Amino acid sequence: MLYTANMIRLFNTMISQIGCHMNKCYTTNGVGLFRSCFHSSAVTQIKQLGVVGAGQMGIGIALVGAKVAQLPVKIFDSNPEQIKKGLKFVDELIGKDVSKDRITEEEGNSTKKRITTVTDISELSDVDFVIEAVSENVDLKRKIFENLDKVLNKKSILATNTSSISITKIAAATKRPEKVIGMHFMNPVPVMKLVEIIPGLTTSDETLNITKKLATSMGKTCTQSQDVPGFIANRLLMPYINEAIIVLEQGIATREDIDTTMKLGTNTPMGPLTLADFIGLDTCLAIMKVLHNELGEKYRPAILLQKYVDAGLLGKKKGEGFYKY
Ligand SMILES: NC(=O)c1ccc[n+]([C@@H]2O[C@H](COP(=O)([O-])OP(=O)(O)OC[C@H]3O[C@@H](n4cnc5c(N)ncnc54)[C@H](O)[C@@H]3O)[C@@H](O)[C@H]2O)c1
Image (cartoon, rainbow, N blue to C red; front, top):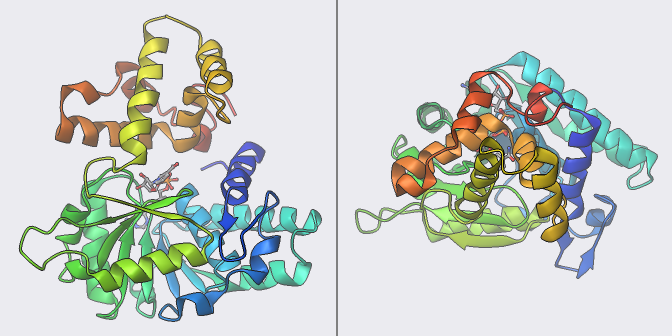
């Protein structure tokens, strides 16, 4: 994965959108104001946070956990290279915060100290709450959850950052479905309870409440959705991105004209093709495949999207997608 200046900008945008509701203070400059707003005592049950996957989402979640919620965060990824790149990205973001006087050097250093990394899943045994952010693949996520279930304390909560996959399907790989929940990171964070198939067998209210408190302590607003493919955000966003790719494929307009039309026309920070590059074209395709399988023909992925993924052009994280980075 390539972390570039643009990605830092996008991530800072994510951070800057965080509002601190406790004190009704909003910031456009990162974490500075959060120091006084949030800290780990807001989530007394959670003493140690775990993050699985050191990709663009996992690193972002870990940083918000360490910086805003001020929790110790342990990141697990099976690929040491990803961890190395992720930590470099954390250094860059914190360095930028310090250079812009958003936080002091000491605060930057203590944030960094709160982040540790491991390459063996068994080393997550002491975490109270895990947020999984590995690639959007149901078999991979189910395997990870099966292993986490074996390794973690019986009281620990398992959240998945999946964009589209059924929480119920992921939870079924564990023996603690009442402690499994969906937590889709952006701002707001929609949380999803797994579907109650057998009466009483669903995400418990306790799990839901702890998850909402954690999200709030990370500076996020919570919304709630049913466990349906794509939940709220990707049910709406992905068909829009997919249609933009079809418009490009059919030669209706250039990539620049598609993006400019939607960026200026709908007052969004970026057009759909740029956004797809930032999300990752492999992730977009995986989400569209889930929507297509579960919801029908209307959601068929664009042929051009499949071609970009086949060619290894996965977007910003690989240096090239619809645009070069
Ligand atoms: N990209 C977005 O904008 C976005 C937004 C919200 C949610 N999500 C979801 O977050 C998740 C991660 O997306 P991403 O964009 O960070 O992907 P990514 O490709 O950047 O990162 C995936 C990470 O998973 C790791 N991984 C793969 N197999 C593993 C294993 N067996 N054990 C441990 N780690 C493993 C990889 O090494 C990589 O670091 C997906 O479920 C995605 O749908 C993505």
